[in-house]
Image (cartoon, rainbow, N blue to C red; front, top):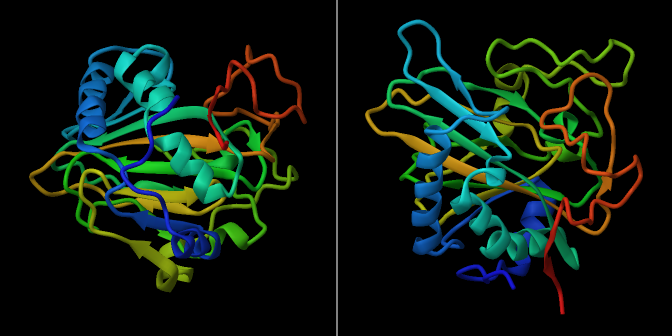
Amino acid sequence: MAAHPARSVTADEIDNFERDGAIALRGVYQPEWIDLLRDGVDVAMNTSDRYARRIQGEGEPVFFTDYVAWKRVAQIRQFNLEGPAAELGAQLMRSRRGNFLFDGVFVKEPGMTRPTTWHQDQPYYCAQGRQVVVLWAPLDPCPASVSLQCVRGSHTWGKAFRPVKFRDGSDFGRDADDGYMDPPDVEGEHADLVMSWDLEPGDVIAFHGMTMHGAPGNPGPHRRRAVNSTWVGDDGVYIERPGVMEPDFPDCGLKPGDAIDSAYFPRVFEAR
């Protein structure tokens, strides 16, 4: 049985999440889980796998990203299968269950000024449904100037934006007529909707899978380490998208339209 969060989310917080598509939840991960995740990030950065990448221009510090690290990093696996994230995600989704889709690791070393491109998460990967939530947890004190930012209400726009690669802004092979739209100029068109928060370890930014989000660079003297986990609720189904999906799970055994509820995508939380 997975651990409980340090506190339950309130009814007002769930309402605000549903309205805005993102919310900062204060003090929901206990310190021992943060310590475990810090150890896990160290292991992830010192091992390699398909999605472990160091995004770095000439003379730049590293921006390290990794997905599906739980398959090789015991600490990240333990957090996601035994920790408080599953229940937290299910509460926000108003779902009876929380199935783990995958994890992400994001480390911007001091002086890394490259921003994270504005994007939605769901168009990258295999989950379709209203009940998809991403829980982004900083492992260091994280002022709003370097933290994840979200566009208020963008999950309700009814638009799926074409995914782009963080390294160079190129796309993932989606065709012009595949129904995906070019991402908007967030700073130019929606600056008044951008939400950002000062965060401490133990806090979490929860955002809907269709919420536009991005992040500034990290020009200051401190590391910015963060780990996220993606959770799917009762209505989540498997989808195969055109072009490249990232991450993709060709060996998951599911067909389009199947519920994302299997040994491959484990049900970590279930309401009693």
